[in-house]
Image (cartoon, rainbow, N blue to C red; front, top):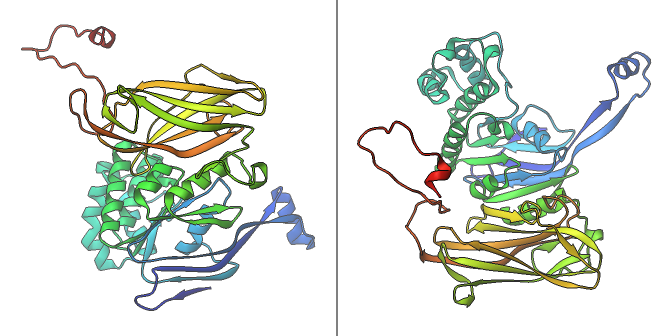
Length: 419
């Protein structure tokens, strides 16, 4: 059931929505069921009693593993599917970019598809005419705008779909993983346009596996697991719970009481403490470029060869730098009943600002494998001032500059320049 809600109400209100699908092993099973009325399918519940509200000017991220129900939720919200139970109330035009090619006719040109697709998402003839040139310009398709869409690459289809949807002047914009297609420059252009839309008071429902973009773009995040909302709240905590899910760490596999705030894992091998020290000893304030040591003290109840890692995040929760002993080709051997200090030495080549340090113990290169202990924001530190040349951005990279009267006949290889 879909209903319209009054002015001043939430842009989107989802109440107790459920959706299930019939899954057949083969097309033959579908035919047998249709002819002989014998059940040859199993039911898959993609969404189960999902409820939330999206307010004006709010951006909500939707996280979850593959199969959690994210795409089904977006299709229900956009009207592509109807719920089996519950209700979805919309207050204004909702557009978005779901699966690539949705609403496009491959036989028609890009120019013709703009008119057709814009009509499908509710734009009037006057709106299409008024914004047509802007849509074409934003898509950057050039002469390809008059070529059949079937000849487009996936990146070109994404460009055209995004250009139409964002120019529809919606109250809510839906973004799925389709933005992962295409070149980096156009992705940045799209994200900039989405931020501008949000800053003007537009609402956003954003699905992505890119945790950094969810933290940067969204005020709030939902975590879906097995078709239900497992968490609804701050993006940082939603991301933490998401990492926990993909690591396969269930509540029953942990100690009843976590060792620290923001940690999880099997804890058979665990982190007892984390400390940082620079030129003047232990502390939390360092200069940009200052060499530091990070000591991760661990204890173990098992004999195991594991990976110890560190991850630096900025004040927005964006991952800035991470490494671990697997990447460094230095596996750590733990013995039952022992304690060990794992020391990382590195220059803090980061821009001035506040940062957090996350530490972890797991198997292989990522914490997805046998996560023993993940301790989020185990330490905080601040970069104050520069110990080398100032720079813009987040990280310092050594640069050598040369000026020549004319282009030299041959340039030195990079390894010679930096020797």
